[in-house]
Length: 400
Image (cartoon, rainbow, N blue to C red; front, top):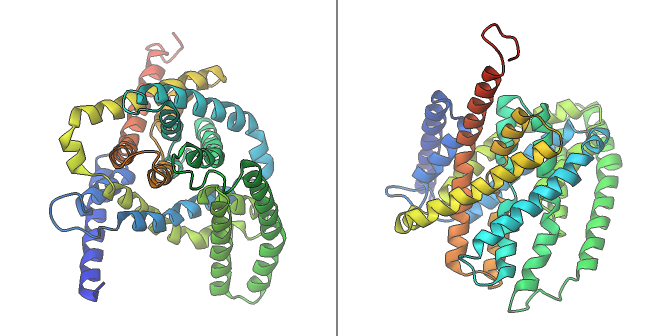
């Protein structure tokens, strides 16, 4: 790319992002929605100048921001604290994936020929966006709240569900390219072996290297070793079929007991913020406006029904697990969207002929639009909670 072209793209991207964030912050809708709209404006699917046509490559690169985000969360999540959330992770998280996935799959049978493909699509769309939810909770200072912790536990279970979902894709393929290449038992063995190596690397090797660099007052080396450790963990988990974000979280949790945990978090914060902002812009670039304009009512129906299914299921399960109505509303609003993992899984499914190009494009658009609605749903959930709280007390402030 020529220097002039690169500078023009940088100016266009930064201008759209700055205006979008400032405007939507002023409207009280949060920076994430502003970055998404900026991506639509600066993307190749809108009229006018655009940054790049290689949206997938940009999004893959900026997923490193999601990795750093989960690494920062892991630094605050000691193993004992994670164990305390086991009921929400394995109970609430598993039921959310299964119930939402089955109901969405039943709806997707209207558009897909094979029930196996519909089930895969349903389970994929049942997963939520780790990047969006954690970013919103961070912005609102609610990550340590009851609904924030429970939402994080559900997201963690969703990340773990990526392994079986990726294993199912080649089995459904009619080409059979990958169906017998890596048996499921071997995949599980690779996962266990990788996690064991990561434990040793993050618990014993990295802290000692950081200790040595800190004594030498080598800040640059300190930062580079931290970034290397995070990205090695992300690469390793990605190679065995887990999400890169999960690798970042595991490395953060392993370093959470280190005396340098807060120093590490302060150093990676600027890199995380920049990459996360560009990630949301790249998601906005993925939205094909021409497709939405060609079949608007069908598309609106798909987004609305999938969101409704996820909202109702999450709300009902939260109540069943003993959460208050207020927490259940907030959890449903936070986890109603579909997640960025859908880009990966639907891409793999298209490559193996499990779904056609049109289904892939529609699915990516559904995921992206559902992300756009997330700040609005969270704001609506807040308004509903305030209304319920206000109606539950009398005019003097005493319970009715």
